[in-house]
Amino acid sequence: MLPFFSLHHELVQRRSLSAPVLLFTLLFAIHAANAQSLGWEGPTGVFVTPLASTAASPANGAGKAVVAFHFLNGGPVIGNFSTLSVTECVAGRLEFGYTGEFHGGGSDHVNAVNLSPLWTGEINILHAKVNLIPENAGKTKWVPAISVGAIGRFTDNNVGDGVNSGALHSALSITSGVQSTKNADFYLVGTKVVTQITKKVPWLFSAGLRGTNASLWGLGGNAPDMTMRGFGALAWVFTGPGKSTIILGSEIAQQPKNLLVTLNSGARAGVFDIPTSEVYAVRVVPSPKCKLNADFGVLQAAGNIGSSPTLPSVPVNLSARARIAFALSYGF
Image 1 (cartoon, rainbow, N blue to C red):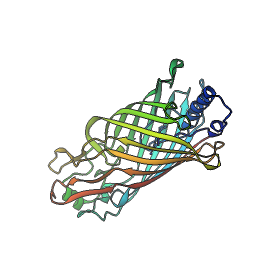
Image 2: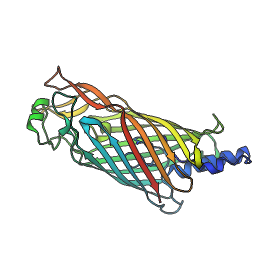
Image 3: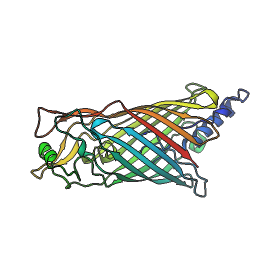
Image 4: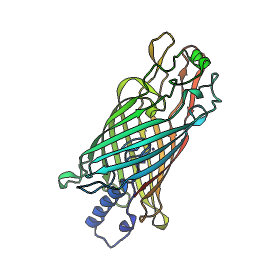
């Protein structure tokens, strides 16, 4: 879980600054505080999509760690999820870290067959990102930051693997424990802060492509194949009361079209129809003196995604629309 970067708004509020100095301090402050904002799986970013920026660190050494907690109320079917992340950066270019994703079971009140047991256990996530081109490289005002990265997920038992429910697997005509519990993303992303549109409200644009074989960032288990999907984010930065900063934004992330299941016949199949995910959120930075961000968001993930292979007349509703999310990020 945006785009949500913090702004050193105290500098921005000094009306006596000339336009060139104001522009410089805006850009510097955005980049400096952006580094304390971790996304759902650990990379510096929005709620669920990475930005091209990295966590703060000196040019010739390692920076201090950034930690984050995220919570998603996934609804009665998939249940609740929480993540704990720690991220480090070296030489201002190489970012890496670990995220533990923890699950609280759902109760499934929206399907003829209780699907909640399909979501089980925890996921271990490793991530790394390399900044190839810094923003405004070559003393320009238009070059975006460009980065490449990877996210690996392990012990992902969601959607069937590891489920001890013979009745559920029989109803869905799927076999447990036969598909991989690993999946990954490989991505290219560009991010640019623009101050020329409105002088007092910086805009942030971010867009990228990812190759992924994970459905809904692993919450839906595996996809049938590695596919190329797009993602992007847009945000506006405002000065709030008491020297706080308020960032309003949204992001989208295309998902692999289908989930991967192994049928009782032994055939591997892509089933259901997963839509593009959307997030609408606000980030609050209470004070420029504390490297703390608080995020509040609404995730539009998936509702009615089709029907069971063996129960075509019964719709499968994940009830994961308009789900509330919350996050805290802190940079030491």
